[in-house]
Image (tube, rainbow, N blue to C red; front, side):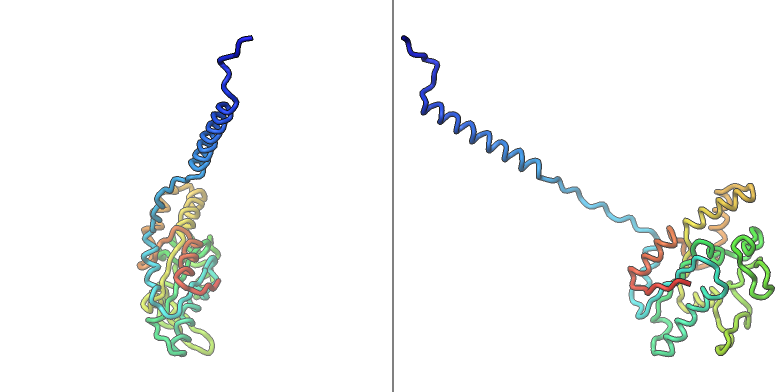
Length: 233
């Protein structure tokens, strides 16, 4: 019988198989390594809002607080910032060294706007805010440039809690941009007006020095990141 010349010798076959297995193993290892390698993408730079720069004013303040104002709540949104400043003065901190932010959001946004808009859109009725003098739905922003003696506190006397008076002492006021957008659209539905036109009118009618922020809750977060203690009005 003739020998099969196509048959590899046993030792040669085993050697070839082992070499093949080694190559396959290395290939598998290489594939596994390639699978586990993650391509690192450069981080996307945070898009800063102009209000971020506005909040940076708090950086060097010694004592800082943010007042969350989602509802009108009579004179409290303005009395409490003044109390904070007064009592810090009494305990050795100059007003200039205190940081106070008032966030007007939700149903408190009309306080950020001029009296002309209060009268035109009946903000007092819509937002359930009475005039402190007439005790009827307000047709004006009573906290912008109030007259001397408009606001008095028992045991304290006359207090300067006008928005303009507080701003003069460094209190920072901002208004929720989201609420401005939504509630101007609601007003448009009620009055059969143009939502974009009313929204623009409200923005144009903001009081001097009022900072528009993306949202009130965004502002509350930024203020606390700057070290402000949180107080809900």
